[in-house]
Length: 81
Length: 418
Image (cartoon, rainbow over all chains, first blue to last red; front, side):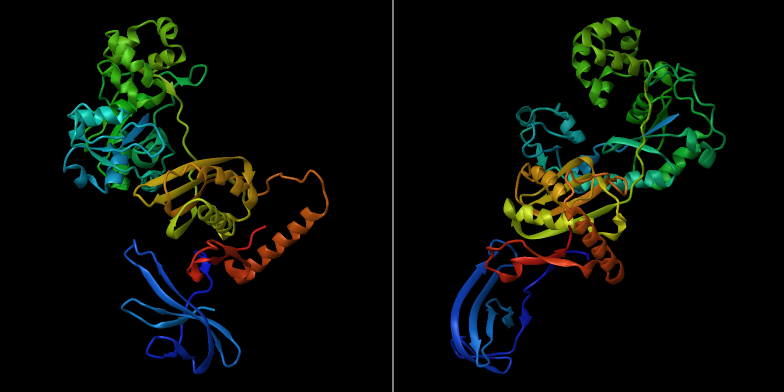
C-alpha cells in the first residue's frame, strides 16, 4: 500500500437534467424526488479550486443517491454515494 | 589518518535550490520558526558584510539591508545529506557526521582497498583522546591517501573540500583551507599552529572559548597550544581542556554511524492541515509505517517526523523513543507531543525510521487479563493475511476530516494495526 486510499471517491454518472440543472434521471433510473441541494465552493485560494452543485435524490427504485455536477469549465456529473 | 569531507554552505545551497541562486546577492538562512532569531549559514557575499552564522537577525539586517533571507529546508537538507553519506559509504567508509555538510571517516581502513598498504595504528593514551604528535612537516601525506581521496571524489561527484590529518580536528582544518580539487593534509600540532583560533568555532563544544581567547590576544592555535593546560582549565573549565587538546592535534575518537536502510511514509495533505487533522494524519502515517513489510517485525528506536509547511520551508523533528517499540498507540503519544511544535500548517507530513530496535521488545503487561494473548493472536492473523494477500489485506476506515464539506475527504482506508 503506497498511501491511504480514499473512500467515497466520485464516480462518473449519466444524468439527464432539466434546463435549471435539476436531475431528472440517473443512469437510466428516473428521479422520484429531490431531497436536498447545496453548493460547495472550496479551495478557491489554490490553483485547483473546487465548485460543485450537490443533489441528494431518491430514485423510483427507492435508492438514496448523492450526486453532483462540476461547475467549472470541465463540467460533468458524478455520483458519490 | 582521518579524512574530512566539507561541503561548504550545504544547508544554504539546498534551501536556495542551488549555488546559482546564491550568486544573485547576499543571502542567509532565515531563522527556523519558533527557534532563536539567529541567521543560519550565509553566502560568501553576505560574509563580505560581516555577517556570520549565528548572528542575531536584527544585526544581520542592519549590516546588510538587502540581505535575502531563505526559508530553511531541514527535510530537504537531511535527504540530500543522506545521499552524500550513502555515496561515501559506497566506497567503504565508516562515516561520522553530526551536521550536514561535514563528514569524517578513517582513511586507514580504506588504504588497502583504494590506495595500497595501510600504516600501523597509532598508540592510544588513556581516556578517549587519541594523541598524535606532529610527525612531519605540514602537507606531507602518506602515499596511499591519494587513492582514497580519488575514490571519494569519484563517488561524491560534488565539489567537496577534502582535508586529512591524524585527528578529526586536524582533518577539519585541512578541509577548511583546501581547494576544491586538492586535498590538504594538516599533520598534527605543527600543522595547526598557524591556523586561527576561530577555527574552534567549527566545533560547537569549543566555540564559546573563541571570543574570550581573541580578546585575550590569543589569535592562533599555536599560541593556544603553548598555554598551560591547567590555566585554560582554570579559566574555561572542561571546554578549555578540550580547546587545548584540539589545538595540540588531539581529538576524541571517531564514532561512525551504522549504515541504515531507509523506511519512510509520506502523506500529502490536500488542505493545509493543523490541529486535529494533523493528529489524524499522524495516526495514519504511524499505521502505514508499522504495516510496511520491510520492517520485518522489528521495533523502532528512533524516527524523524517532518513536514512541508504551507508558508514555505520545511520542519523536522527527531524523536528517540524511551524504549524500542512497535506499539502504534505509544508511538502516537510520543509523536503527538512533537506536532504541537510545528510552526505552521503543513502541506505534507512524513515519518521516517532512523534506527530500528530489536525484533522482540520486552514489553509485557503488568496484569495479564488475557487481552494481551487475544491481541497477539489478532496481530498474528493480520500478519499472516498480509503475507498472503499483501499490505491491503487488513484495512480500517479512518476518519480524517469528518467536518469536510467534500465527502471524499472525510475518511480514508488505512492499514489495520493493533
